Length: 139
Image 1 (cartoon, rainbow, N blue to C red):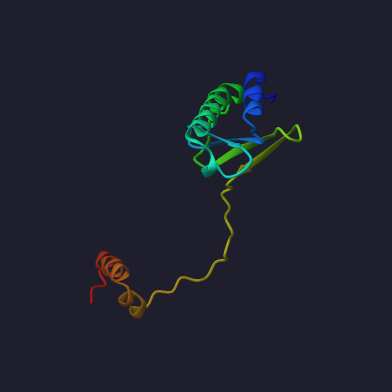
Image 2: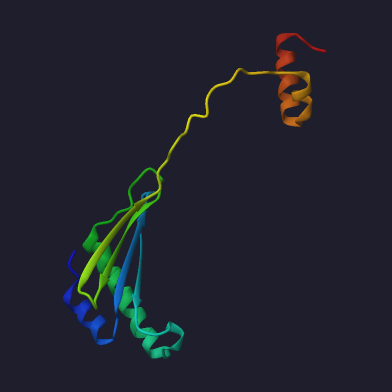
């Protein structure tokens, strides 16, 4: 996706090196987060410079909501894209990610029920007593 020219021009004018647009979804909501990287440490910037960068990040975020059509629909599993605009090298990188539900069968064993195991756990003991009571095998 091309970067809108006015956003690109503003970024270049204030010395932005990269723009990272993070999009995340999966629970029928989408979240966007934009970070602009400038030379040096962010803490060394003046309040005015921080405000200019913050305004640019907000404007890019607003643009990204419409430009990417990322709606976040899904089954609750997290997924997303990270688009990095490198203004120094004039490249764009798209990283797609997702958390995947995975099951691993650990095998099947025979169920064993003993008096000792029932008494070792209060919850199991209550269940054991309830089952014994329902079958008429009261102690």
